[in-house]
Length: 291
Length: 291
Image 1: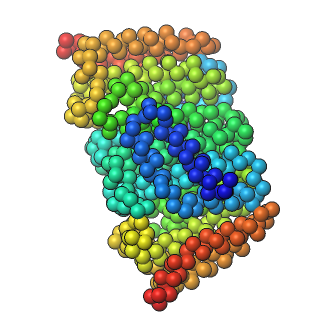
Image 2: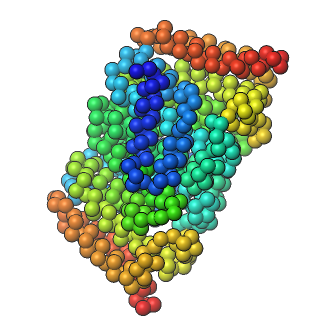
């Protein structure tokens, strides 16, 4: 089965478990599926599975659960980020955001339920190797909650003074670090040496996202553009300018490839990172057109 | 150490871990502590620890983590329930609700962070017995999320037709079932036979809460009264009348005591349930005064 088919299957199974068999409140059950589809690039679980494969994956059911758990958390974060008290986004992935489609209470509950489902998905896949599962749960919690996960990253936006590096590392970097660490842990390897790869990939995506926010249209992004500027949020474009931000993106991606720890599938993993870098190419193109 | 001191210590340790050592966004870190204090009765972790003790507790560190995790989830649910899109409550536990004290974005994030912290607290206490820890994590997820946990209970309020029993069991009963099941699981016992005790205690508390909502003042409750009526929510008082609801409360508590599974500390546990029932006495008194 291809990696993307494995991710889709694992996500579908997890969501179906959360939706129940008709005993759950119908609209909230629907909202869970709505919040997770269409899937988009599923970039975080793809990185997770690629790292697990590179490490010599030996517990595929645990890798599948870890990949689904990470993506569920990512989807939950999008639902809550879109709420009126944050971005107040009307559109996400080219369709109405969850609170617009289902109501604000159901968006809060859908986000909460997806977070819980993530941890439960891992607990339910733990039978073969509970010790590994709790380690993965701990990593996911660390990179999602407080004091250093994506909740902390969002929390920085309510502070008077923001450290841009800490902010980006927590807000966007955290789930990429989770991806590489969880992938290694699912394969029974030490997670720590994989931190830098995740951090660098996360940094690259943040810079790319800042560039997209500054350069693209709502139609091409499937969500509102110009949000950083509108909310006066810190951004690499504001800090380095367009050309500087593009240069920074290239440097970070080279560093990411250089940081890959020695492992059986090292070469293939470097290839995956390069492929992900090419996904960012539209940004380079847009920039060249304007430069 | 007394049970309540154990709960306070476990909660304090978990919250401190979530707050970090000064690297986290300060206001969100503060909001985590604010959302969990003053502690109130800590009734759910008390039930959990009582069941673990009755079952012959042999992993006290895991019991402590389970108790803290359950209370963190309860506190998170209060923070999100108080949000403007749900109850829009200005006051909780006699002080401004989290969104009034800290802002709506920080209340959403505090709730999210407390949910995550709950699962992480269990993962971090798993070293001695990972298999038992993942079982407890699964129980907590089942009783918290979808399709049958407190999120589902809240989700029923967005449906056109509500089954009152399913609604109450999910909204309030779920965390009491989690308390008895997690307590048994922390002590290495089969969780399933403990379901009924939790369900009955939960039902008793829901009826007592409905009675309090109908009878008491905001000052005596430390939160707004008359919410069920104001939001046209289903309630035992609306369904059975005051006298009928009081009769029902007494029946449920007798049934709860009768349902306690055979275990080493059975008599003491029955005593604990009776003590909790006495905490509900003000409700009986208010009712007699009016009858």
